[in-house]
Image 1 (cartoon, one colour):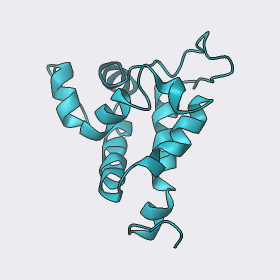
Image 2 (cartoon, helix red, strand yellow; image 1 turned 90 degrees about the horizontal axis):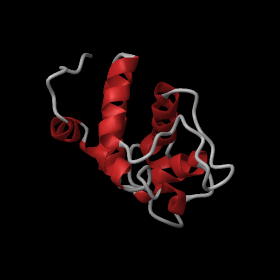
Image 3 (tube, helix red, strand yellow; image 1 turned 30 degrees about the vertical axis):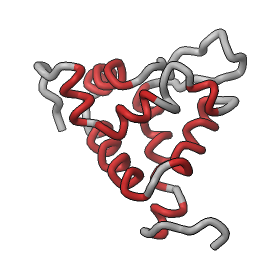
Image 4 (tube, one colour; image 1 turned 180 degrees about the horizontal axis):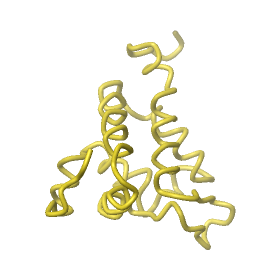
Length: 127
């Protein structure tokens, strides 16, 4: 897939609404409030979402990962409140990823391996 270069940041938010939502919450500027490390935030995020959001997020991530690295960079800058490839000073030991493709691949892996997604249905607590 190719993302037209004339799309604005608003267009990218409309094109990737679930990823935009993640960028405004757990993967946003205050993402350290959601976990001790970036990897933990990514792994725990699917547990906070409904099944339809998870499925839509997987579709959006697959679409994004089919793009070039330059397009992934452009979309990430528009959607994320953090730069996951830079080791921040605070909090210590937060972690970082070698590339944006590696970051989004980790997010995709977390959503694809969510128990509800694997089961294809909502799983009630205690079931």
